[in-house]
Image: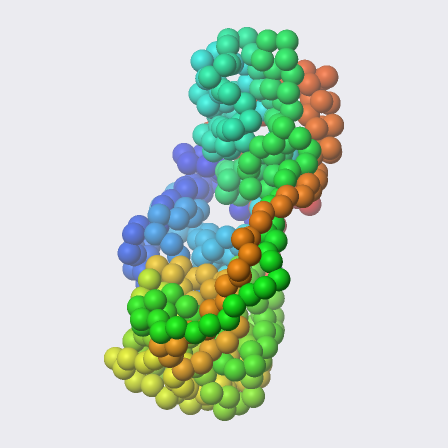
Length: 429
C-alpha cells in the first residue's frame, strides 16, 4: 500500500496537514522523541533487533521532516540515519508503523550567472541565493584567478551539480566548469571531483619514485607509538561485504546501512583485538547477537558481532592481538562470519581505511624499511572527468542568455512512500 504525501516547506498546508523541517536535538534518544510526540514507546517492541541497532544513529542537529494534521497529531516523519537511509514513522490504524527506507535524492545540473558588483562571493549569493554554491565557486577560483582584480562589469558563469531532497538542497554542490570574463579577457576554469579549479582540462598528478636499494632494520618502539596502528581482527582476513551507507540486506530483504565490514570465517575462528583497549560491552545485543565492544585511544571504538563465544568481560583491558572471542552465527546472520564495526568520535567509519593487513600480539620491536636514495617526485597529466561536456553546456546557456537558477524558499515536491521498500520522488519518474 502506498501513502501519498505532498510535502511543502514550513508554514504551507494541504489537506489539513502541515509539514515542517525540524532539527534533532543534541542528545535526544529515539524513545524520547516518541514520547515527545505522544507515541507509546511500546512501538520499540515491534522494531526488529537488527533495526534497533540503527536507532542511535540519528545525528544531533540533523534535519528531518514531519507532517501533522490540524490537531497536531504526527502523520509521518522522515528521519535520516546517514547519507542514504532514513527512518519512516507513519500513523496507521491502531497506532504507528516503523520502517527504514532509502533516501531518494533528485540530482540535476544547474546554471549560475553572476554580474560582478562588489566581490564574487557576495555577488554569487545574490545571483543564486545559496551560500554553499558561493563557497564552492570561491574554492574553484582560488589559486587560478586573482579575485582582487575583479571590477564592476566583469562576470562569472558556471555549471554545478546539486542533490536535492524534497525541494531543499542536500549535501554540498559540485562545481563542474566556470567561465570568467575580466574586461576583454575570457578564461575557463575546469573543476575536479575535489572542488579544485584548473586552467587546463588536464591536471597534474604527482607520484613518487624511489631508488632500488633499501635497508630493513628493527628497533624498539615505545608502546605509545603503537596506539594509532590497528591490526586486522582475525588472521587470513577475507572480506565478504564492505562498508556501505545503503546495502540490500540478505535476511531482511530490504535496504539497510551496513556500518562495518563482514569477514568470512568458520565458526570458532579466533577474533583478535585490533588495538590495545578496554572492553566496554560484552554480551547479547539485538541483531548483533553475541557482541564485544572495545574503547581505544584517539576516540575509536571497535565492535565485534555475531560471535559464537565471548572471551572477554566488560571493564577488562586487552592488548592488541589478544583473543577476545570466536566467530559465529548469532543474531541476524546468514552464516558464520564476523561483522566488524569501527567508530571514531561516535560516528561509524569504513574500517578498511584504518586496519592494517596483519594483526599480531603487540610487541615493542618493530620492523622498518628505509631507502638510501632520495625519493623523487614526478608528475603526469590526467583529464578532468566530464569537463568537455560541461563546457559545451555552459556555452549553450551563454548563447541562450539563460538566467541563473535561483533557489527559493518554497518548492512543491510530491513524493510517494512505499511502506516496505522505497521512497520515490515524483519528479524522478
